Image 1 (cartoon, rainbow, N blue to C red):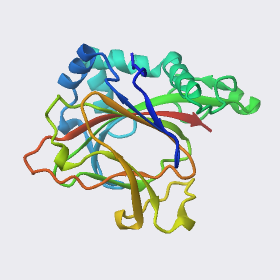
Image 2: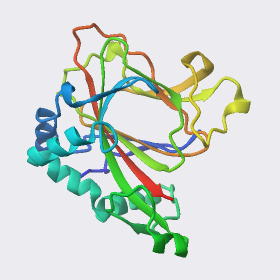
Image 3: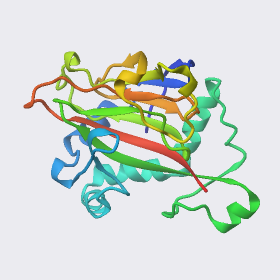
Image 4: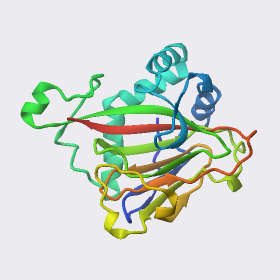
Length: 247
């Protein structure tokens, strides 16, 4: 369902992939039109100023929304399929980012956050995909610099905005950054930093029907700087897909 033909890669300081027109126009239009309303979300101030709806945040609302919204249930089933994870791993390997997981892992649709007993005994990597609806206000929405939790292997952030609904002057792009104090680059355990503690190296603009994909590494620092739009501006809506390992 996701199309990677337009993928453009940066490899330093860690692998990041930017994809335009990542979904067919009709599919994208249907997902945007039926994106969940704000009152289903949970406010999450721990990493900035954002709202989340996921398996972990307001799970009852999440499950109910998916069961009542066929277009999103279909997309959810696709993301949860082994083929989705296989395709992402293959696309990365084709672009010289081989995580060594294609022959060594078990793909799992289990709901548990723990690997199965058999996988642990065999020391196999058990992968699963999870997705989160996320929105930030146009006036001050932000995600502070961090590197993601150790069990998040790959992250895909898909915009969910109508074309021309967002003003580029407001910001809202995903930025690659590094600590100004380079002795703090190593951050496997995902400590957060303040914006004034990092150098922004590159920002991928927030545009309709795009995907920003990055690989979790010891130095995969990224953020969304405080958005400067009006109080009456639209929410910055995204879908975040994480390919994760179970322990």
